[in-house]
Image 1 (tube, rainbow, N blue to C red):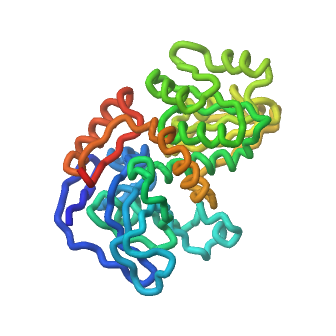
Image 2 (spheres, rainbow, N blue to C red):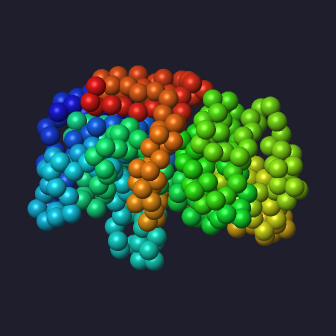
Image 3 (cartoon, rainbow, N blue to C red):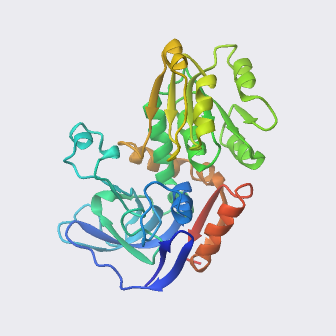
Length: 339
């Protein structure tokens, strides 16, 4: 079979490898579509904190079951599935308190374990979710990022009384928008790229702000009648945008940091205590993957609004390079194994 192997930052090649066989409790999956995540791009260019090489990327994936290992009863050959890529240990402290999404020994398919940018991959049966056969594989590949966005909303306790600000209208920011609208909140979203803000409006944003053209703080002050946002979710992963959450959030409000960075950022202590803020980190998802599958199934066309380009597998390296070089032109890129 063919696989796309990353050997070092920006060094990938298509290689021939034996088809992986499922062990006990595992399932072999034929890949249909893989969506590229911002994490994939940072893994590719060597800037992601969880990078390892050599590896096979791909964790936002749809496909169908081609073989099941011993002891697997919940899935059968021919089932259409999507991947929930995180594999937790069940023994560490966060797992012991039910917070398996931040397992101390987390292994992740497509990051630390071989991923779905291959003709076939193997995953534990518990990591796969059955989907309707008529759900397009492109839309289905977006279940995983929607689970991340839905979890960020759960972390922030978003409800129908909230005015929420999302910083970043990339794919994760857009799924946070979708989750907040599903919870009944009013949502404003901030970005620098007009095309992404147009997508946000199609997905239901109540207010879009290009931070190059308008002052986000003053715009949010006016939008909230002077109160500022009850919840601010950062989905960029840059020190400047993380720091900006403090100016955008209301007194007594909640801040959720979903963006990933290795860099330090600075917050004034008095701003935290004066506003008595609650600040949450958000990682992966905790028990909301099935909610994401249901949402994408029922809103496939809306979810797929964020897909701007599709490449065949043989052009996957070009997909990575183009997405990195021209973020203003693309939002979500998918790689199709069936073309």
